[in-house]
Length: 159
Image (cartoon, rainbow, N blue to C red):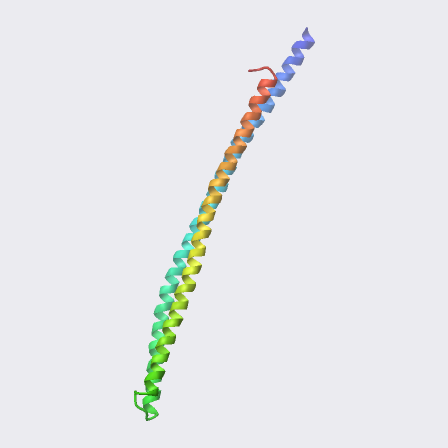
């Protein structure tokens, strides 16, 4: 009978250790999930900041482009007038062509920025989805560990 009592105590200790380990693992899985979620949320913020940076850069680049274009048109006008020609006919066609080309260039700059900003926003959205997924995976792991602890208690006849 003493051997039975000793074996029973040993089993209870082993079950207790198993349950304790599984509950600790559940807690750790939750912490890992929160950490991974925080990383993904931070990545989303970085992508959103990239989008804002791209839009700010576009404004700066457009202003700089306008300044350079005004200077270029001024030099072109000066070159036409100093050559002895009048600002009519070919001279005006050159200035108009330059203006049309400038509009195209600005449109390309705006389009490229919008595409890059949309990609950054999509990356931010995907990072948020990954954030929620990381948290859900951690919860699933926690449930598994807690269920394992419950199974250990049930199989040992403690519950």
